[in-house]
Length: 269
Image (cartoon, rainbow, N blue to C red):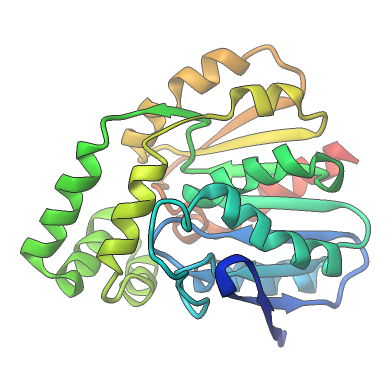
């Protein structure tokens, strides 16, 4: 099914590019990609759900994909808060009825921030590859940056694709998405997300929240363990583990993820 590409001007004069499949009547699903990726990660999912009767939206976060990069490039212009605000005009225009957010990794944090600033607009939240609280030394972002400089950004993109999944089709798609990643931008955002805590946001949010974990996403699953412990017993929080899936669950196991999401949304009605 064909999409419409839309451009919006956000803070710092940044142009935010989204793709919208506005054919449904059930509600709206907004897919938010992870750090260094772009909306192509979710294009197949958006097309699928639009055919099931949903409006579907994908977006390139600021500095990613076809969206422009803020000037100056700094920690102040690449915050999760600004990324969430970038999406508000899109949500207010396309969302008629229930609004479901689906975020991967950094996209999950942006979705959590949207729940923080506009909880009234968000019906459900589903994340995968996302810990809801984190505290890591910022030196990790520096080491990652210099490793990228050492191997070269094109080779780095190939390594990300090769190590992130055993699924050949997913690996080929990731190689395209992560072709020549923007190392300075990724380092800055890394610094911004080394330390955060959205647990209070989750507890205050009244909608249903689903944490999806790829069984092979071992690093994030370890980091997310504190979040799971803190939210266990909360009736609005649930967790599902997807076998044979890593950090990019929607690419590793697309059919399983889609069934999980539909079941989650149905129960939330």
